[in-house]
Structure formats: C-alpha cells, structure tokens
Length: 85
Image 1: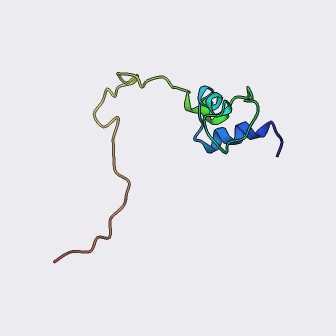
Image 2 (image 1 turned 60 degrees about the horizontal axis):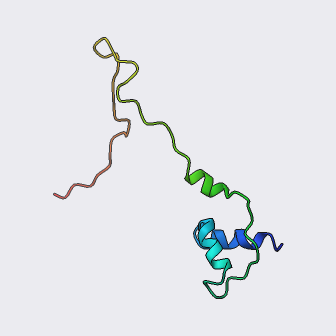
Image 3 (image 1 turned 45 degrees about the vertical axis):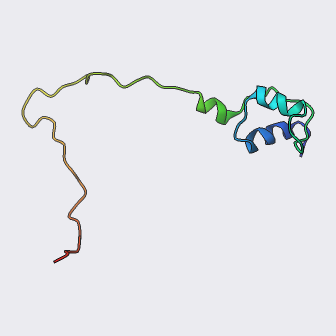
C-alpha cells in the first residue's frame, strides 16, 4: 500500500471522518493510527452524500381533464392467503 493511501484508508475506516477530525488524529489525539500527511483528494462517497436535488413540485404539471383519463390501479395479482377458519 502506498503511503499516500494511508490517510484515505483511515478516512474510510472511521466512517468518512472530516478533514478537521483527521487533522486531530494526525496531531496525536489517538494512538495506533499512523499517518503523516492528509491528502487533498476528494472522497467520492463524501461528495455524493453532500449532493442535493430539487424538491418535488407542489402541484402537478399536467392534470387530467376527462373522466377515466388517468386511472390508478394495483397490479399485484390475486394473493394466495391461507384462511384462519
């Protein structure tokens, strides 16, 4: 394993710890976590966790105008449920 990968490995092992907390570990706040320098690489998992999306619209963009133009149905076929009695 390359020396550069060690901080990234500990970042993943410790639940994607922030850079500030990793800096505390580097300064000797914990025993048994050996690494020298924190890399500036961005963790793809952390970046995906910070993404957001647009909220759902408060009203539908298209409304049905006629009766039976839009039908909601359950497509889960007949159920084979054993009777108690």
